[in-house]
Length: 142
Image (cartoon, rainbow, N blue to C red; front, side, top):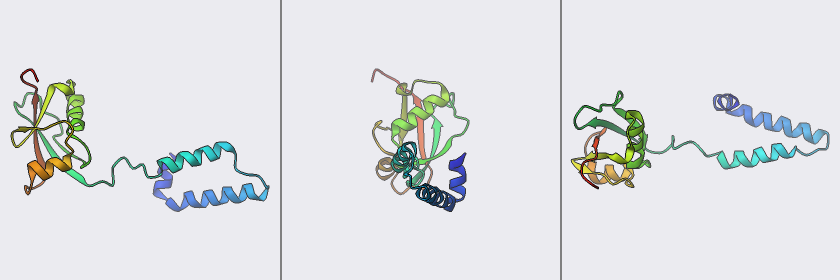
């Protein structure tokens, strides 16, 4: 809850830290160790924004045979995400094993380690957004 307040009013965090610091200095004490541990954790997670600031890619996910259609087929995701992330997302939504799904772009099966940025540069090139991916249950013994 406090994080939400700090997000809405970023100056509040700074002013609270200053007031707390002056409080401890007035009594000639240093901040409790618990506070110092929290500082270290804050420094580590300070820039942790879960890729919200990354370049975003818009994707349309279509099923090849329309039997396994997703409820929401349009998603926006970080360009640093991989094909494996998309397969896991589809697998979770459809309650399937992700390793038994194929993801296709321009009728080519995509490798699991490709980032969406790489796919957009190589397979999608100059086409309009959103990128169109097809998924299907894996066929064959691969």
